Length: 302
Image (cartoon, rainbow, N blue to C red):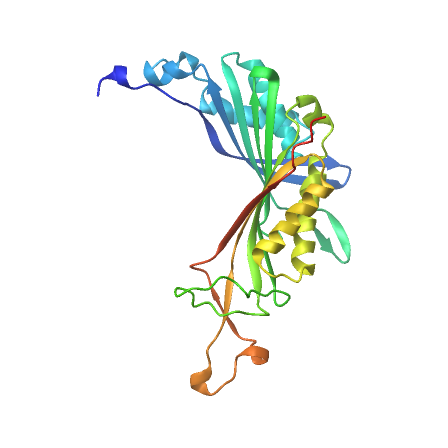
């Protein structure tokens, strides 16, 4: 195939997995924030690929340094959507040939320790593997920003209050109906914000409040819902999040089943079934995967 028959369709590069820890001090009280950041760039960079022209390359090392310098200057490292916007705004001002800046952030969990019944001023514990995430994309054209944030790896389980029956059956179906079962999943939720205007996204959206609301609604609904299925519980979560968070346009959930099956003890003449079922075997694979996206309906045109 000749070179005239192919072209560079898309290009983007930068620095991934930049690890950052920021410590804020207020008297004896200190707060720590740990992030993993990726900064990637699009723009007039084609010749670096097609002509070996490095003059257009903002190096990936520069991307790394940018993250650290912005973290040093910022009072918003804990507010990951705002911190990401500070980085993208800087990049577009600094490099005129870059047209789109992407910042993806994972915020790792550090919770203040409770010592002798009181919160400790400078000691923390990682009390769970759930993380907050965001992906901010800033376009020079129209000064447009899109933000997609998330809650990942929130592992939840309840031992009752979940059923699954009356499902479609055919000659391939072997799954028995159950009226009471263990329900466990690792929550992966992602939501997108309505506005694309920097003035709104920098100053009028309370991003930490949205993160807290999504987590609270997820756990409250999971615990309180008499679940007819993962699908039904998932949709109730999404509905409540959109009702309570007007800045959110739509939300995705991916809920993989974490299965716990009753151990067959019949060979030992031990009844571990029905009301006597209390010993289970965790089974990782294969697992069901339930996903859905729920969005606001477009406003009616007058």
